[in-house]
Image (cartoon, rainbow, N blue to C red):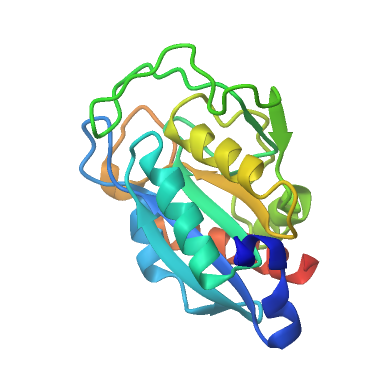
Length: 213
């Protein structure tokens, strides 16, 4: 497609454009912290225009929607957000793997087992976002952050790998940030962050992406 071929055209015609996606609640939860954080993100971060688009926690459909919006808007980067319950840090992901293996059904009832994200695709892709700079930017605000080397094998990883595969020969950067539960989810035995800290952490990570362009 033309937008895919053109790559980072918007950088040369004005403001950088970054698509930010978030998931809806899944696995019996009533809240997905990324959906709430997405609502609170400003329309401009670090001099970049922010395009916000929630995607469903559904294998294939999330990827389809993210690609469609990214190409329609001719974005320079895609930053996906997802929940990683049990983690105590905001964790930019370093790698997406070519595996869909779900321990629970997605929101459409799909539960793939030992399936590739892309038939015949490489085993893995590294994020094309500056993950270490993103972590450093979050930590500067005294919000817990670290690089993660596993995005799991659920819809989050499917979306990350699928985007990296789709945009591999373009200038469009892509990556993923996992966030912990938030206090509103009242998880007594899991780490939780304030929603305001999640929002600020994501903003700082996106600022690092904008600076790296």
